[in-house]
Length: 372
Image (cartoon, rainbow, N blue to C red; front, side, top):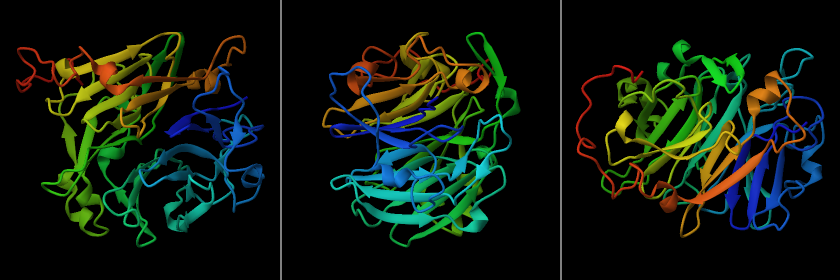
């Protein structure tokens, strides 16, 4: 059974990840055409079958999240970890975690960076990657999360060097560990997973990295100039900040992304919904909107991206993941869906619309009651 968990969209192709969390997964990274007449097109291994041979650490082992940058490259975070949800025993670290960078014009490998041995912690899982491109395609940074050991890897392409960043904001919150998805209850203690980058600010020549642990109702942020300093970040832990209020009960988020207009989109996994926030407004309950909700087509929205088209779209992958892990998927229904909407249409007439405000939109919040 497939475990489709991540997506990325670039020009006329959609890339899909299929981590090898159990036996029988033939390829961990696949591609389908963006404009297929087939509602369920077959998955083609990316970049080829040769990359997906079992036991080949020079290939691709197990991928959860990916990111296509504005320079025409696909960044692949390969955890090297298999059998994560296997009933056969503990997960196995069969290969070292690595970042692979492919040229999307030729599908050839451009760069491989294998994580140092001291990055690989017992019971760790490298899950998500976000690429920070500015005005030089060679001077690029990538941020990668270890969801189970609560670290952030900062990788410099120019230096071909990486370092670990740690902070207590990366840890799960035990008060958010109880999940309820329809009739299925479960407990997770997953840490840092969601990341979103603000548009580049020419005035201070910086960006903001918004982030959240999976098991949390809160959002946090830090300026990228802090974490891009390999040694200096340790003296600036106070620069990691809590963002506004909490999202409230059932506010766990698996993925987030910010569009060019400063709108943050995020997946509310147990609400079968996609939320939004206009970053020009205070982060408080009254300013957190919902752009889509469905107990049929958005069951456990796991990944989310915005594309790079002139008119941007938001793309969401829903996948019934907890049922895959703890129960069984119903093969008589559609279990994996990719949905799309234009970002401007998605937020229209919601509180996330930059043109919409209420009497208290810009009022500071004074009470945290009910907002944890």
